[in-house]
Structures are given as structure tokens and as C-alpha cells.
Image (cartoon, rainbow, N blue to C red; front, side, top):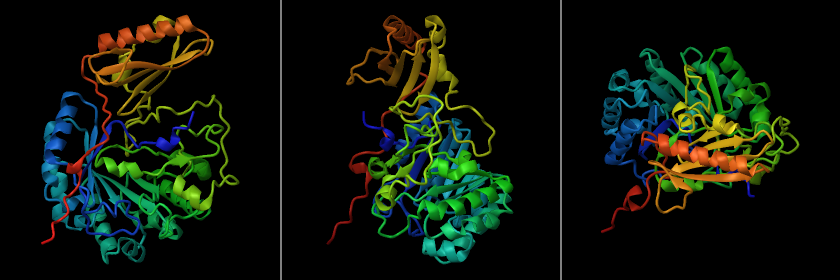
Amino acid sequence: MQSQKGRFEPTRFEDLTVTIDFRCHSACRFCIVQEGMNYFKGVPFERFKQAVDDNTSAPRYKRVTFTGGEVTLDKSLFDFVAYARESGGFDHIRLQTAGRLLADMDFARRLVDAGIDEFFVSLHGPDAQTQDYISQRKGSFDEAMQGLNNLAKLDVCIMTNTVLTTMNVDVLPQLVDTVGHLPLARMEFWYYLPMEDYADNLGLLPTMKQLIPQLKETIRRAKAKDFGVVVKYVPQCLLGEHGDTIDNAQPDVVIVEDFYEVYPEFACLYEAKCEHSESCLGLHNPYIEKFGWEEDWITPIPRTTPWREPEYGKAIPTDNPTGDDQEAATGHPAWRALVDGVAEKTETQLETMLLDRRNCVYRYVCSDGSSVDIVLTARTSERRALARSHSFNIHYRNVSGDSKDKLQAIIRAAVESVTRRDNGALMLDERKGLVGPDAFRRPKQLG
């Protein structure tokens, strides 16, 4: 069976990101949607309202993040924020921004008063020379820093995000010194994804040998400041004692469908041998094509449990930058309640529960190692299913082992339990985002 790792779909099940528009007053040299800027549309307000109303009637998301090219440029932002706040359905409202307009304290305060309590601010260099070169806008560093200083006075959660490229790799540790005076909840570092410059003709991909020493020192300095640290799209084994910073999760995104059709795939030669294969993606394909597999440097951590093909993707917890919620990836109580008692009734073990926006998978294991997966998907009449409950199609997959009677008993008990307990309060959704001609701006007619 072909590995599914290359089909990694970023998702963080309890977080929703809404792309309001694709316009920006910076022109970052690494921008992953350069060709889509001013071409892709943002999410229509009515579509957003429907998503919020769905979440109010069937709670699913705890946080909504507003983003875009540069979301603070859009005059409708406050309408979106107001509707999200007034719905009462979200614990947190986050803004993803370059932070330049936040240099105006009155505007920053207006955003906070509107209900935004988390700010995810892009900062790609420790000084004006680096940041302004990357953004191709003189003064962007000073504006972003003033914006961050303003936020520090407003009692909100502040995070920074840095895209790792050849343009900043040599000065990464200095970035921590630049923001060391701020009350940051977290610093995030994302290895560059060449979604449009797939062959890296611009030369923005640093090799792992260039990156890792600088990144490890950066992490060390950030931890010394007691900042949370997250690293994305870097092999976990290369970070050594800082491997705990790897988190490749992303939120569900209401965005143009085509956006993720060019999302790079990932792979690792040692996937089946490594203990980290459930959390680490390895290297993305553009890197592999340019620099190779790094097989002499990447070191698998020997597995303590048998490797199984990651058919369903990864179980992802919610995003908690302040660390105040330690719920495990499998700790979604409402979803566990659907099969409460099935393991006890059948004298088996619920080994794993995997949950993303499209599937909920319960893996049951018998004492002799026989196992079966019970899979819930969104209820549709178009797809064949073993059974249907109020909200779900119910399937079973990956039957293995000799305990056929026991496995059949698990399937029957799970179907009965889900069908009886599914009252419509939970929901799965196969849609990625906006599709069709309404997702794009119409080109201006000549003449």
C-alpha cells in the first residue's frame, strides 16, 4: 500500500482559520501565494456566517483565526470579528498579521476592544536590514516592532512567526534577543514551503546542515526566556533535545480549494523505523529533489511499537499557546462517548482514537493482537456504508488477526452504540473550502 504521508492535510481539529482576503502591503520574497495574491477571493461574509452558525448549533471549534494577505487592510475585518464574538461560540479570536498597522496604538486598541485576544505576528528578521529586505518594504521592521510593543501594553496573547529561509538563517538566534523584552507566549519557526517556486529557483531553501545549528541555538535562547517554541516542517530527529518543539499541525482553513492542491508532500526514508513517524513529516519533496534524502544525517529513533501505515493522518490536539489546556490528542470526550462501553462489552481495548475534520477512527485491539478500525465519516447517501446514524456513515476497515467472532462483535457493538448516541450535536465535513468560480476574482475586461 502506498504511504499516505505524502497526502498530509494540515488540520488542527478544534481551530478554524478564515481567510478574509488576498491583498497585502508587503511583498515578502518567500510568499507562498504570490500568484494568488489579488486573484483568490476571500471568504464571503455569508459563507463565514454559516460556518459560525454551524459551530454555534454543533460546537466544534474553540478558536477562530482571521488571516489573509494582510487581514488588517480589509475594512470588513471588524464585521467578521463582531459576528464571531457575538456568536459566543469561540473561546479565542486570533489575528494573523504582519503587524505593521498595529504601530498605530489606537488601531491596535480598537482590534482588542473588538474582541481579538490573540495576535500571531510575522517577524522574519532581527533587524530592519533583514526584515525590510525580505518584505521589500522599507520601514516594515520598525512598524512590526512598534506593533508588538503596543500589544504588550494591551494584555493579549502574543506570538511571533518566522519563515526559515536562506535570507534569515544566519541571524536566527538574534531574533530572540530582538523580542526578548516582550511577554511572548510562543515563537514559531516554519521551514519554507515552495508552493509556487517548486524547484527553488530563487534559492530560498536552506540545507538542514545550514539551518539546524542556528535553529537549535535559537530554540535554546527562546526557552531560556521561557517562551514557548514550535517548529514546523523540519525532521524531528535533527533537533535532538529540542525535538519536543515539533508540531506540524495546522487549523482547518476556510480557503480556496485550489490553494492546497499545490501543498508540498513530505517523505522520509526511515518512516517505518522511527518512533517519531506519527509526529514528524520528514522532508518535503522540493527539498528532497534539490538536496537529496539526507540519509547520512537523519537518524531514526528506534520504534517501541509496531509501525502501521498512517492511513488516516494524524490525531491533532487543539492549539494552546499559553499551555493552559493539556488535553491529549485522543482526549475528545464527546467523541469517545459515542463508543462508551464498547471495549468493556467486547473485552477488547480501544487502542487509538484519531480525529480530524473528515474522519473519526476508533481502533480496537483484541488480546491476541487482532484488530479492526471503526470509521465515522459525514453522512451522505452517495457513499456506501455499513450503517448510518443521525450524522455519520459508519464503516469498518483494516480487519486483521484470527479472532473473527470477536471482531464481528466489536463492529456490531460499535454500530449500535454510535447509532443510539448520535443526537446530531457532532459533525464531520469532507469539504476543504471554497470551490468553483466564486473562489476567484474575475479578470478586468479590456476596453
